[in-house]
Amino acid sequence: MAIIESIRKLNNSQFGSFGEYIFEYLHSEHGIERKHSENTDFILNGRSIDVKSARFFTEIRTTPKKYNRGKIDSVDFAYIQFYANFVICSVQRQVLFQLEYSFIEKLFLEWQGKRKARVISSVPKISSKFKTNLTNIKECISKHFISLGLESRIIYRTNQYKFGKESPGNLLPNKIKSGSVTIFLNFKSHEISESNINEIIAFRDTNSYGFCKLKAPKLHIPKVDLNQLSTDYKFKTLNELFANFKVHDQLLHGTQTGSAIQRQSK
Image 1 (cartoon, rainbow, N blue to C red):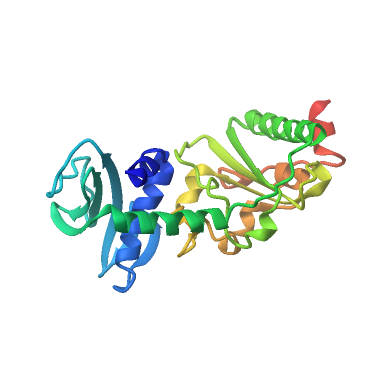
Image 2: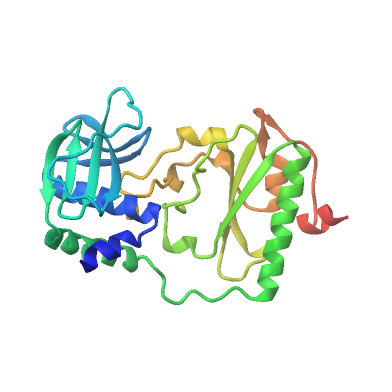
């Protein structure tokens, strides 16, 4: 079936997102709430639900397999299994629903349409000049935090204004490292330069546990509510970042003037 091939081609992140979309759609009239934090994707009837999906396209089954990858107290695993004949969702092997692929195809097209609606069709390609600027900015930041004994993960956006309070999907680190810092460079436009930085968000990865998440993030990816983020993590310039970033709850001291990039390169 064409729909099976389409699902087979999804990467793991996309496949997980589609599984969550199916679960949420089928419980939309039952007061389901998105959470996407603390090992919980949804709250349903007061219970925490973590949705897991798996592909078994070579198998034909009418009863579900058991999810055997660990158990978390107070969290129920909803296991969505894609077989050759049906899609089955179960909790502790109790079947919640069994769906035919004709219906799955309908949901797939809806999910795909919502994903595409968020894709900006004409993002200008980054010029060689801006690539060089970005490399220099990243190197400047990396050197600074290396001097503090910290590893840095640097991401950026040139169109954050279109997303409002919704953070990038990769702002939250996939793996928390005690000696790592995440830096998000928010540029005013597609012009990448130190003078065109609108805002910088920087935090120790270990601090991200307490960030306020959006209740209904797009594409079911956990996102931070940037409006609720403490000003302790927000900076206007590289100079301000280097002077005021808190390490071990203490301010870094030192007056810094001029271009941060020029200063670091000396």
